[in-house]
Amino acid sequence: METWPPPACVIDILSGEYSIYYKGEMSKATKLECEGLEIAAIWEAEHIIDRIMGDDRWHSDPLK
Image (cartoon, rainbow, N blue to C red; front, top):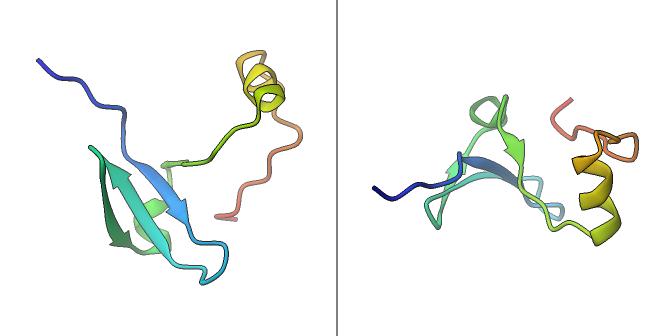
């Protein structure tokens, strides 16, 4: 059985448009459809370590 990570929300910082990334595919979405999903991001190494350690004070939720 193949396993996939759960869907993630992608927010285009230039246009403000929302998409959902799932199983290697992007599909257009609304802000409401993205609520509750993790925001897909490219993480710098120090942010990955912070996140693993439970320190996310540098992170802001763009859906709020």
